Length: 136
Image (cartoon, rainbow, N blue to C red; front, side, top):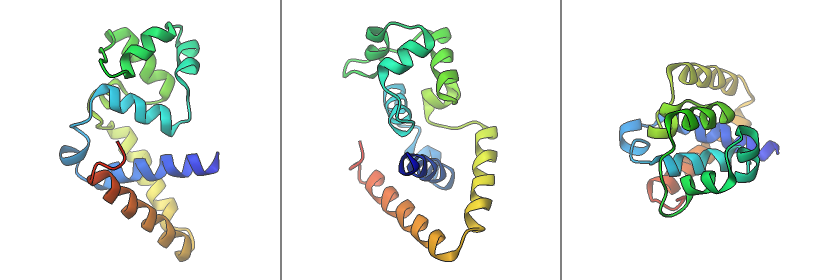
C-alpha cells in the first residue's frame, strides 16, 4: 500500500511540475477516472457501492464506448475520490490541490538527499513513459 501511495504522490507531483496544456488537458473523463481509480487502488464495484450508483453505470464511464455522467453523478464520483469534477473532466487540478502539492514538495525536499534523488528518478522515468504514451 505504501508503494501505491508513493506512486499517487509521484503522479500528482508530475502533474504539478509539467504543463497541463501539453499533457493533461488531452485526457478524457474516462482516462482521468481510470487513472484515479488505479492510483487510489479503488475497484469499480467499490466506487459503485460507495456512491450508490449501479456498477453497470460506472462501468459505462470507463469502457471503450464511454459515456459522460450527469452533473450530479460526476459530483458524487469526484467527492468519493477526493478530487474535483473539473479534474475528472480536464485533468487540471484545483488551486487548493496545487497548494497541497506545494506542501508535499516542501516535505520532499526536507528528506535525506538519497531519498530525494530516488524520487526524482522515479518522476523523470514516469514522465518519459507518459510522454511516449507507454502508460496509457
